[in-house]
Image 1: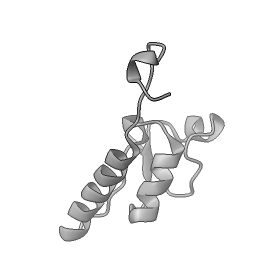
Image 2: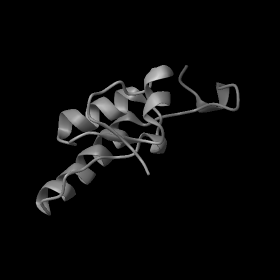
Image 3: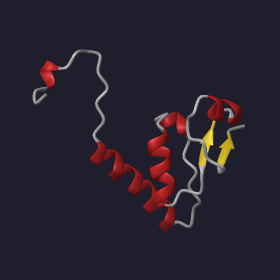
Length: 84
């Protein structure tokens, strides 16, 4: 498909280059300021983005409920932190 007008709507479109740039930008900021980044999964709810954030240097991921994050398969990671 080469024309956005051909998409059935509603449709979710993700600019992966922009996602990568945003993940890097926030991690670079955290690194430059001596902060330990632990982004909240609710901003995207995509395990692949959470994994990439950790690969870039995040110390873990914040989740609303630890049990739910494990049960529904989102971001199974030993560095999950439940939000209080």
